[in-house]
Length: 67
Image (cartoon, rainbow, N blue to C red):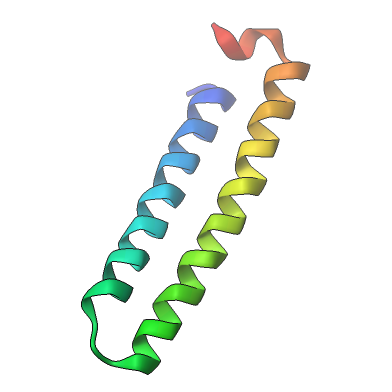
């Protein structure tokens, strides 16, 4: 498995986790749980931005990434 493939999988996994936390936040009536899920979603979104930045760096540094 290439670094590019691994990075794409990591991004997809974090996107899925963030979406799941947002769904949980919308579905719960418990305000404490809602806040926790929203915070977790924000954490995942932050991680996602970091991973996308790293992916961009890899694309620029490693031409074989596109292969």
